Image (cartoon, rainbow, N blue to C red; front, side, top):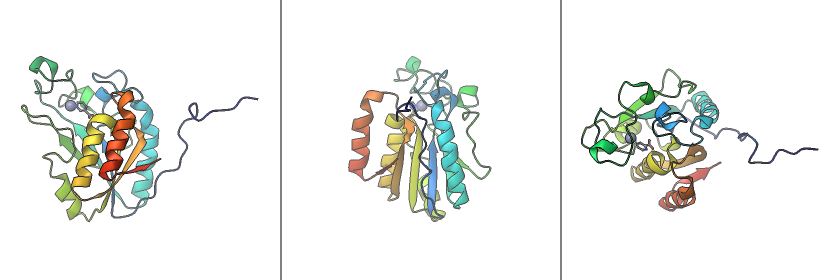
Length: 199
Ligand code: VGL
Ligand code: ZN
């Protein structure tokens, strides 16, 4: 008799519970961060079905859905040829910067573009976007975060959500890291800062 172990099984947990004062914040689910992309994160595309289920549940509950995207000008300061740490990625209006084709963003999704200045990088969806004030204006009290990459933009976004005063949940099973070896340290940093890990 064969048994399916946890590691072989696809994720089967039910979505989290949402209500009207919640926002689900889906971070940078873009082609360049998925396998085949310029800055591919292993397992990035595999998150899509679970994130779609989470968005469907959030929508049913009347929660706000927000999708951020890394949205760089050509010759952005973070690119290697400008002395930055990353290969060219998520250049505005290119296929690599588009959301993953299977990501089922509802029509009502609030889209947030970040890191749009030539001379400055920004990892957090709250960094210079006005998102914190916008969420407060909409009556949002709690933010639930997932997406790419866990150890870069998801981490920065989660820390900022806490700083902005939101109750903050992290769906770490619906996030994937650039450096899988750093996942545990990253989880510790985020829980120490006050985030609740949901899985
Ligand atoms: C990201 C590296 C460079 C991210 C963005 O979205 O996690 N990572 N720019
Ligand atoms: Zn970037």
